[in-house]
Image 1 (cartoon, protein in one colour):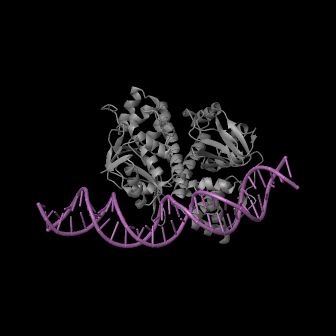
Image 2 (spheres, protein in one colour):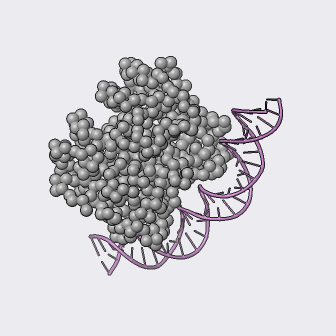
Image 3 (spheres, each protein chain N blue to C red):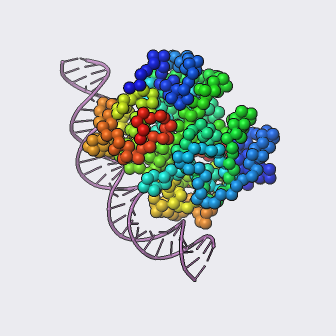
Length: 246
Length: 246
DNA sequence: CGAACTTTTGATATCACTCAAGGGACGTGG
DNA sequence: CCACGTCCCTTGAGTGATATCAAAAGTTCG
């Protein structure tokens, strides 16, 4: 288990893992993130079509980027887990091309455009870490595209579960093999491009093979090695120093 | 037809459309991009696993980002068309998590890390334009994910064709309804997550409906409005001032 | 003119979807 | 504390879109 510093939070831990922040940098980040706001599940933080206004940082809970099709179908294109920040350059655009909403109850900080500007101008270390975050977000998006584009249902789900294990471990929110997963099967379906019925059956298949245990929003990965092989999961795209090298 | 300035190229045209470059900025970019290199089709510019070294700019032809699965399957996660530059911050990472290769014969410029550094430090206007390019690339990736995740075969292909029309128009390489498309049906299959056989049948379906004409690497869109409706294509994610508003 | 690649066609197989309904779990109000 | 509603998970049956395999026809290019 990663030992949590009381003055730390998921965001600081995540950035620190990328660039080894100095104490003043940590203090700066702690000050910015000190008053999180509670947001209920299934609430939009940013809506498609609206002008971007500041940037959101998730400190607890799961949020996502998503789009709605005209037939009502939702597609989730990214998860925002604790420590994740939406794009720092988003102010350059005149309107959002997707929405951001919570999936579970969340602790959220909204960062003002002026603060972002201040970081970009006067905090090179933090800026560097944030740029790396953006690159990793992009790599993750590419990985999801590959996932949906050419893997079977069970493989897609397995890949997603492996990815979340690494991401949550890197912010101290997962044990060696398990983590809280506050998503419904419908959420997973909208993420993987499958129907909820088929997600259900694929999860059962993973359980039947003894790879995972999943109930009441908690997952334990019973056989990580086989699950990784099945999903062809190679964590390098996350650019995290994994504790257990693949 | 967009009238091409002889001192201009696709890259300058693209950036200029985002931020209205000054003459000195255009001159700076012209100087950087003055000696393109010819690269044959199906050649890697950057390989997965290798450390990034400089950044590539496509001035003519089609390239792509792709990954290979262990079973040999390829998935294409982005097209690089004339004017497109791969990520300016890529030097922050220690190794590439995907490959970049040409699909058709290309004119390519390699930009040194020092040049990128110089731009980021001393060319705020250009930097701003490049940051917008990155945001658009990310939005495009999200759109592709939605495409593969929840559209039918014909819709996916239609969407891709609509996107390319807008992107190529923005750099003066498409007429109102047509452009050169130097891709094989296998390339399209690896992009859309379909089999090449099914791409072929879907293209026939689009032809049969009188929506497109496609032969010998040239596509004419015969009924753009219907094609857009079919694909549910909304070009806002490209953040381009389209000549024909949707 | 032949070799290699690309597109097209046909036949069959399969994965995943849809529709429909039953069974839990959880919270709320009586 | 029970009754009820709601949301989520699960199961079954039937369907459909897309994959796979195989081979023919067309194209490109040295």
